[in-house]
Length: 227
Image (cartoon, rainbow, N blue to C red):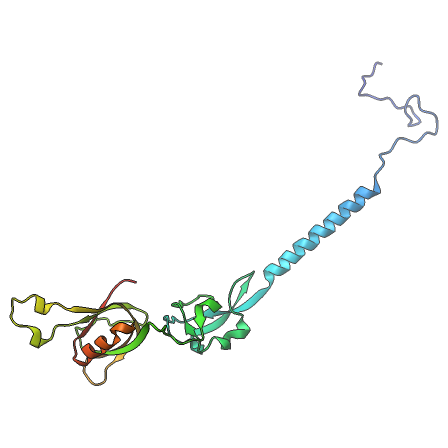
């Protein structure tokens, strides 16, 4: 019988034709260096995977804002809390939460914001160019829904009754803009008049005296505008 090059006949003794009796079959030699390298790689990858898995599971407590804090207001303990976060974040550590109490917000702080040092300051709430001024308002001199802390308003001086010289005088009925933009620092009801409101404003220092005088005369009005 004829065999192809891919076929090999083996005699009854289990040896290749032409091989000497007692000669062992050829075997594949394995290099110990490759085996050791494979073991090292497997162990190394397992260690790296274990490290990143442990890091992903570790959480760090940081300070988070839980109540809205308008810019320029001092932070109260009830305004902040702590939350555990994973990974690298830029925020004040939870163990330092008491250090932010009494600090002044440099920007409006919204709930669920992770608090950073750049968002607070230990200095006063106002720069030298601004001032706090209080105004007393009657119904109709501010929006019906009132104004909230942090809102931006325009401060107007209403024309006085003595300035109205006639029904057809449009100039006498024109309000004067005392401050194009002011920020509401606080608002509360006025116990001295029914439906009245007391509002504290952050205004340009140059306009503070005129606003105070107009408020004393009962001629201040607030118009809420966009930021």
